[in-house]
Image (cartoon, rainbow, N blue to C red):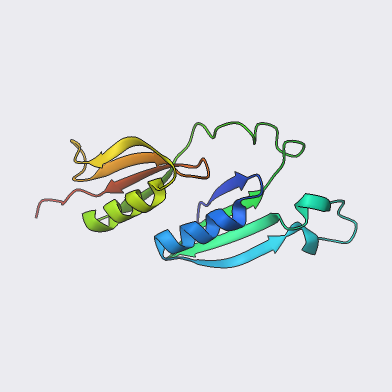
Length: 142
């Protein structure tokens, strides 16, 4: 089983996923615009280049995404709330790099620093409005 987070955007899905692929070292394996949907699908105008499906592979993990408008997804124009995309690593330098890159142009919520549970943890909202937590796993005693 694989549990995959699906993120919704308003016309920024392609840009966001290209950014995430660069930051996380992943690969976009699908990016299907609405213009390539079935001929009877009534989507045109500004939406034709929006993505109805995007898939980013990072190692054995994935993130899915799509562009939505308020008519299809009420609340899409509101701040994202109630979840975080969370990254975990054993490498504090990697965690700090992810945090710094993802927070560029966004907003730091909790600065990346040592906590009682982690040698390096931080939370942020990226420039696309997506909330993230970046966590360094503590060393386990031998």
